[in-house]
Length: 352
Image (cartoon, rainbow, N blue to C red; front, side, top):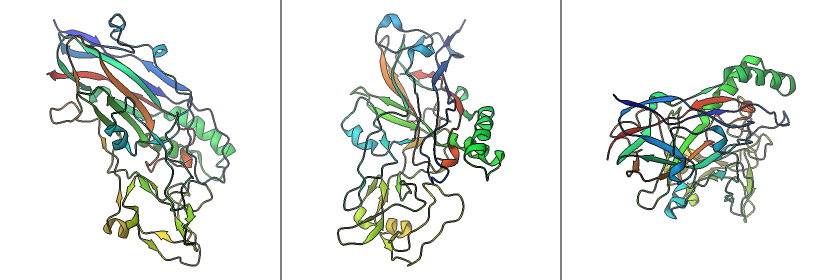
């Protein structure tokens, strides 16, 4: 008779604790949450093998499931970015490095200073072990993320009364529900022999660019800097190669007001500053890094690059991270205080 083994399912619950942000701000990089919570579910492994998990390498601690108390808390989530992952991967860092995407610091050439994020996301080393040599992956049928609609309606009521009086509850709720599109899950395999890193976008639709112009100083206009030759230009944030290939349009002389909701990604243009021409710049050789992300759907096929190698009765370290990608277009001020739920489940893919 086949054994049915429990592994683990992570339930991520972001419970609102509102931040005092001014309604005049064009950007809110922060969402509120209480902590990362974990429940367990039963997963049919359809195998005689035992797949177990622990938060340490102590063989006595491996078991079928983890309790909430054994995992790290996250007091506050805020958007970070996986940009420049290739840099720390070259050095084979033992942990992933996420960067603060909301910086307003840059040098005299308009190149932003990178600041590693010190928190605002979940990340923890976990250890998998099996009684045979196997490949392990996610079970797509038991991995899901969704908006917590009930909590978002409650948040929308608070926001409507205190911040967005000109918006309906339905409009605000819709904005809150969309934040789930910016959620990311990553797995780092940190050992030297099989070092690898994977980012998963549960709601992947096209590519996310990890660079461009932003309104990070929250004044309603794309941020600008003054070059050493006295010219005012828009700041190019993010992971951008060949910045010298950037092409800017001449100042229009009058401010250009944008249409739609103001946000970090949709701002006005200063009439006395040179405006970044994205299309011509790319044609000229400028490269904006695309997020290297996978869908969870289909990861349990032989063609999928995501697989974790386990040697018999040997703990295998992975670093699980859950975060909000700051360059995702769904990270805007209307999402302040959003709530979401989710589960992640591992399974054996096949023998090695």
